[in-house]
Image (tube, rainbow, N blue to C red; front, side):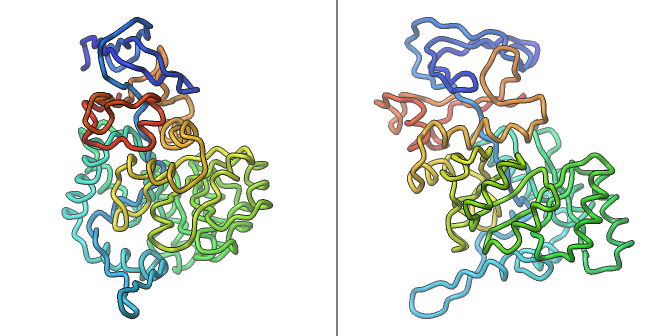
Length: 369
């Protein structure tokens, strides 16, 4: 698309309020140069691309984990045995996976992201500097926007050794992404956070996933981003809102692991900026259409808010001055859907139609700049 101009007609889900406009957009050299209103026969629906604000792409090497059968047809879901460092299933598998295989399967998930409408993502990258290098290698030539959070590989080692690795990780990443405050010595976490701030990088941390015992600790570290808050109380949410910390929710993942459902409506009411992610690839695909449909049908949240959560609200992944909204002068990070597909034909409200029922096979094109 570079060096050429594209004129795309259809119904455009435009601007920060996602207003439907019947007309066309012009894209030149990856930038939206014009949005015009005019009658059109096109059934295209042009919408912002998805932002998958929380992934663990290393899990791409294990997509059907054994979760443990207790009796009869019932399956025991044990989050710690699956993902808790250092000896959860995913961590054991990652230690046994070759660098080349890791790159191969991460790239497959990245291609799946593109094929399902995602233009940007944030990944919590296990494996220290090597894990970050594998993701960067897998990203080559794909043009996806990424925010990469690294982490130390052996936090149980002496403080000086851990901090030396943290500094190396920060040189090659956008910041640190920690599994949870209860997984680390608090003194170590404070040192890690100080090191991150000194290098002017971002600090993100999981909190309140299984229970709320680590939320206060996580907030005391003044993080730039919180993940989950599944078990947060109203008091917790008020404190998060006051601190102006964005939260990423992962509804399908939380459902699969049996830790409950994040209080998304209450987060929005508290004034928290909420975005969404698909979390561990071993438990869920990176398909944000599936995440959006699940959220729209499980939570009592208005369709426009659900769509914002899965798109515009995660634009921090693309940098402080970037957005995925369709506006003149913005980069063209958008999806084009066939509004006349067997699935979407007949919808009256394009936002509700996309949010509740759109699928990857309704896509005509994905643009990311």
